[in-house]
Length: 378
Image (cartoon, rainbow, N blue to C red):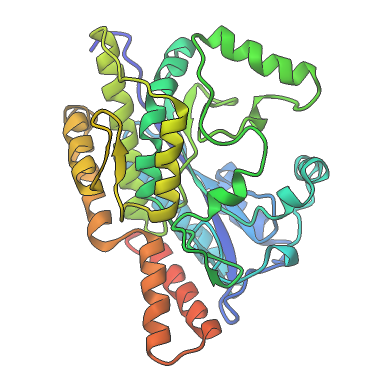
């Protein structure tokens, strides 16, 4: 590596849904003091979200994956503690199994009120949560170049993170239903391709000058140059119920970005494919998670995901070792073994149905599983 190698610092943002421990429904009207109580412990690392039944946390800037794990565990613990004092629990999943979007209340905040005024029902339906991972890259041009290459691997990350199989009390048949909701907003999906940071800025400025958005925070692509920080922000993933899975995926992501940078300084690069092809894998990841494999465009056929993940890890192992996160990257294979949150939610539901429970009670069992797993291994 060169002397001006990026630091590859990390920041992880997670959004949680707040549920009533008795009814297991989303808490439409949480106590006014809840956020301030969280802020007393966590400061600006916790904030509200679009809906009152949501809360968002963000780690500090972390120098390595171990720091990220420690900080994320602290944040989850404190949110669990504070909400628990009010009979509430956070669940780290991207959709609630049965609560309805039409019953939720908007957080009174100018930014959110403007959003819902502009987007109407499209915004009001956003009872969804995601995980965003920032990787520190100080160079603007490098961020744009790596964004173009990393796009290929976004469906792979999504496939390992799925946590939204239910919507409005029904099994959607998708492992990540969240993105079907989010994709209804403008400026979502795979990032556009740019040859330079200046070209990116020109396109953003056209939309700002036209008055359709105030700034680039209204770009909601699966992957984007952060508007607030010198980072590349990956946004495609569902929020992981188990913290171990979140850390494993963050480790794989930062190792992948370092691998792409390593190729660059050797005057090599990851082959870029037409977005039409990558969208096909994105859909497969939404629909099946890792169950039915993804397309390897080099050979032109669907390949079992286990094989793809082995290749993925092999490509990044040098970088994982350098970053000190080899074991965390290897832990992505544990996700295949035990399933994503979506797999476990569906298994819990089916076990309850098989035991003679009705649909409502089976879905409540899913919420109980999510409460438990959100607090696991902290």
